[in-house]
Amino acid sequence: MGGIAFHDLSAACIEAAQVCSSITVIGSGVRAINILKAIKTLGADRVCFGSDTPFAMMRVELAMYAALMKDQVVGEDRDLVLGGNIARLFGIEEYREEVQRVLNENHAGIEKILIILCLSWMRA
Image 1 (spheres, rainbow, N blue to C red):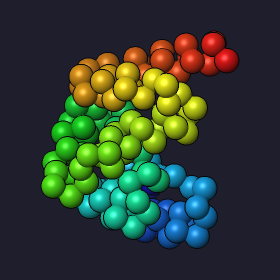
Image 2 (image 1 turned 30 degrees about the horizontal axis):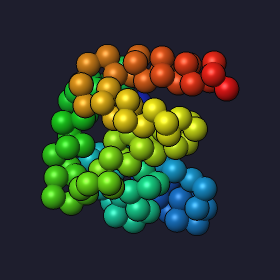
Image 3 (image 1 turned 120 degrees about the vertical axis):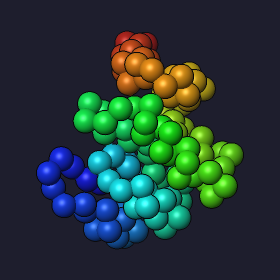
Image 4 (image 1 turned 180 degrees about the vertical axis):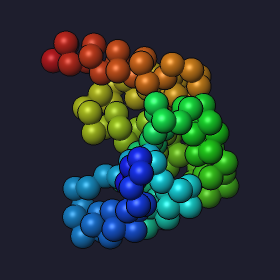
């Protein structure tokens, strides 16, 4: 929803996603409050974790998501945002638990998730 050196387009992205139900947003490069707004407006099943890596440290972004969602987005909704949605979008739901575990480890997560994606595509 955001981008390096660009204005935050979160409000426009959320509005577009409200009109077009096939849009899923990724909370990368935007303010935390806008990620929560997207979850509350669109539903947890339409928002994906975004680390903004390599411009931000993934473990810091995961900590921010955890703090942001604490007591507001819990259980299955939290799991969807932190890995379930991206697994569904990439067609690797069978690896959902592995994606979630990798994200929870807070280290080299993106590289491991890319390996999982490559392995799943090789099987197809």
